[in-house]
Amino acid sequence: MPVIERRAPSRGWLLDTSPLRESPAFRRFWVSGVASGIGHQLTAVAIAIHVYELSGSTAAVALVGGFALAPMAIMGIVGGSIVDAFDRRRVLLAASFISFIAPVGIAALAWTHVEVLWPYYVFTTLSSTVGSLVGAARFAIHPRLVRRDQLPAVAALSGVSAGLQTAVGPALAGLLVAAFGFAWTYTIDVALFMVGFWGVVSLPPIAPERATRVGLTSLREGARFLRGAANLRAAFVLQIATLTFGRPYAILPAVGAVLIGGGPLTVGLLTASAAVGVILSGLVSGRLGGMHAHGRGIARATVGFAAAVAIFGALLLVLELRGGAPADGRMNVAALAAVAAALVLAGVAENIASIFRTTMMQSATPDEVRGRLQGMFTLVLTAGPRSGDVYAGFLAAAALLWWPPLLGAVLIVAVVGAVRVARPQFWQYDGRTPVP
Image (tube, rainbow, N blue to C red; front, side, top):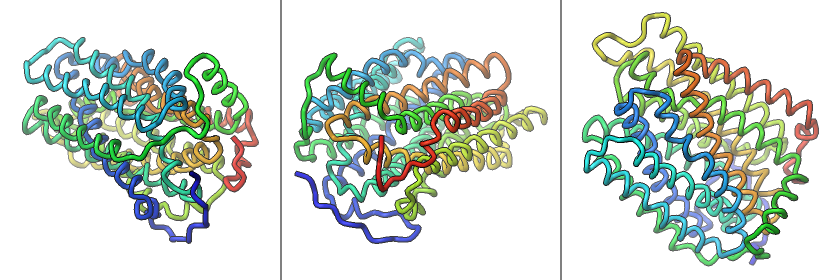
């Protein structure tokens, strides 16, 4: 039953935590999502380090995500239709149980010292594919647990959650791999994944307000809605550009080994740096909820992200020219701090764009099509980074480590300019009168 809306009081710059205080279901859902997400990020970084150690190739690291692209595309399209057809709590429970096979399988491979790559690719592909359905269900559930006027706060809290996951998980991965090895690291992910079930099991039933049937008709309805949602399409395009051309994670194992030194610890800290920016910007995001020019905010934040990625690439170029990592393998602390700072700035810009974009999507999309739209956007969020890994990993393998981020920054700005020309109405989008 819809909750009666009321205007939320202004809370200044600090993060608006009213959804956590006022909705126990959202609070449990959010906390358990942070725990399971930390485990997922922990394994994502550990598996990249593991594959690089086994193969010595950034291209092999890129294939961890590359193999999942086609299955994720299918699940992203079909999964949203499933979310709109059935009780969303049940869909999320079923998807989570299937996804649980992946961390258990990866841990088993590590404990039995399997060194061939294809079994790791199989389990990471399973995790990524089912993760598309999990993501669609989670985001479609959020607006049903809070008031509509709290959606900007929910978007900011989701950003903080993502930041905590991608800050704590990678940093923990670097420490655990260095101290205890891969098997124990993957096993901790299994334990954290189980915590995630708690928040899902405790949800109330969440049936769609107007259920649809899974099938071609449902998919056509979702595609028809997106064709008429020019503002949402523009937001999608900018996000795809950001994830494809501005994601450096596939080259971070090589950056740690070749340019900075320090091994797995350096990789973990660098991977966590962007998340630190997400957290910091989320903690002072209170006033973003009162800003209504969401399209313009997304575009400007995307340009800021491109600038930070360009700084990151320029720093890698300087380190390359100065001879790379210390010969004895020690960490170049000054280099680590400089590169990490650039990634923090990227995280700040990325989170600001995400808060505006998520609010736009959840407020401008009717409930009956929200699962299908979130399925498409989850495809962007999951397939986009994999495309980015392929772009950065293969381009770095063919050229130099600093080339992918510098070229990527130019390409992102070019996409923003193209959207400005093709969809000028996006700049006039007003969150008070949301138009998809």
